[in-house]
Image (tube, rainbow, N blue to C red; front, side):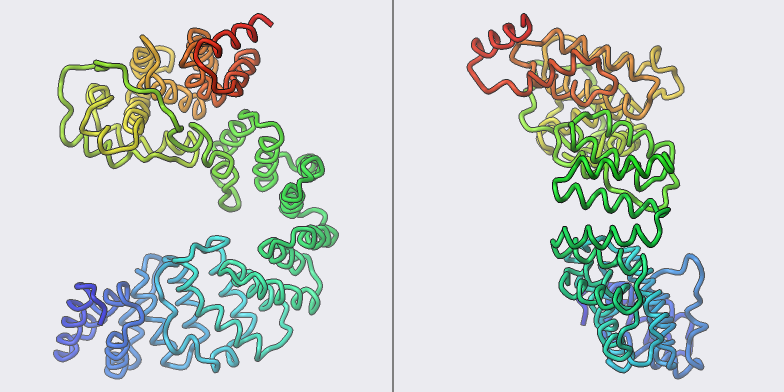
Length: 513
């Protein structure tokens, strides 16, 4: 039996309720047990007993928009027991879409070959496509394993129904998500051959990409464009595939052609910004993408282009390597921070973030920590010992951004506090304060000119010194930084590691030149 103590408790209560004839109570406990152990035989035995005593038991597990997944799964199993496996599978897939890492479908009736033979292939294709929209591509391993029973159903259905184009295409989409690239290609090829169409070529193109067969993927996607020249999402796919082949100029040409048709089409805008950044490394493209995301919260689907570009990049995606040390005696206030303030900062202070606007949003919870406590937490042993060096300081400074947000930026207390942290030499608190200023410039275009001036001024002060690189990394991710400062920052990053006196003379010669 499942070791989860709640399962034992729910089963005990469900048995007792059944013995008393309290079917609604028994149903509630069984739904709770299913959420923790969806394949446990004892639960399904009690479900069968409940169904026998309640005319099928379906009314005991009502479905609504907010029904918990355990109740949905229970309803599905009772439908299957009543001979309605097609409807049951759709409900079970809905539960899997809600929590893909739970083994909702690992029960005998789902993997029974009989189900694949009797289920309507169109209905199964729709169920699989809905499931795919809720699953990563590829799915994480912990998610892929519980979803494999659905792939088994498709295998059985394909064996029974032959060359059904929609079923083969949807099955291909699921197969590639679950790491079955070869099967995905086979099914997509059969589907496209059975009924040539734009969607069939798209499925085939994606399958080829999953299998690493990029030239063939490109050919399939080009054929998809011929079916529907107005579908700009395919233009974005072609561009991304060309980029994977190293043909970046052609890829950018495809995005330009699509943007001429619709300059605000979300898939193309995301792809274009990502590829432009890949072409020249100018962070302005990522800032432009962040602005687009902020101004268009209702995109057709979730995009990951900004996350991918920022991942593992200094400051864009997390705490950079080699932060400067705290200056000796670095302290901003004499009061000790409260235990609650320490706990709140530690809950937030991760070493990574998807991109600067996401870091700003994550810091919102620190609005419940007073500004003086955030200042007191800078360099405080209670947080610096518990986190990667620099993480606590970064998040404390990001937290300051959420105080007094009703004040105009230039006259705000949050700006004044962060500027105050820039006094003196460069250390990790200085870097954290600068990053908070830069992050605010990402989320508020009205603050960009001011922040750019601050960063440029600070970089000018340290240029040629031992901390020039530390500030240069921040300068390169600052919106609207002037060109000359950006070029000097880039040159500073490229300076080879040499002894201090030689490095300084190198920079001086570069500046004179």
